[in-house]
Amino acid sequence: MFGESPQVLSPEGHVSRLHLFDLSTKRISTIPGSERLWSPRVSPDGRYVAAVHQNWHRLMLLDLTSHETIELAHGLVLGWHDWSHDSKYVYFFLQGADNPSVSRVRISDGKLEQIVDLKEFRQASVGEWNGLAPDDSPLILRDVATQEIYALNWEAP
Image 1 (tube, rainbow, N blue to C red):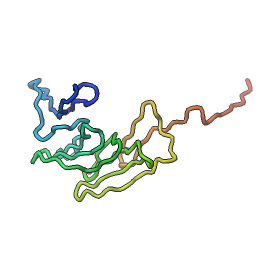
Image 2: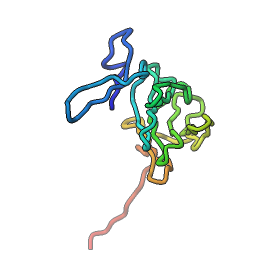
Image 3: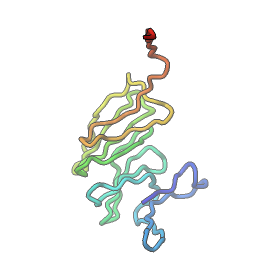
Image 4: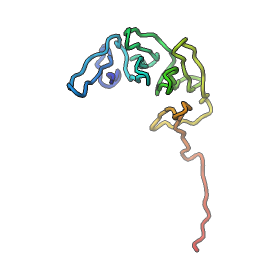
């Protein structure tokens, strides 16, 4: 499954969609109900797709059975969304806000929950990435750059 990148590949006014590539037939099909979505993540149970709306401000949930789409969360910029191992939550990074964070939304009832406050955390600006460990704890790249200086005194034997 893949989506059309709204800012790179799509001309002005183009509507992004999600697609499936069938490895056996080498054919691409468009997923019904996926208009204006990109950056898909399929749930581990295969029932849903979490994707970002092409305006970058809405995290959406597409039911692959009914092809219905609902909004899970909205914010200034949503990114690096990922499914919990049990398909019950979608974790995401909220950036560009006064209070950047890693949050999650429960699929069953849409309850939002902040997992990690990143206001005082120096996140890497190059190679920015977030993910989940096998126990669903957040993994975040930290910028240690030149703000932390270490000295090593070494004497040759």
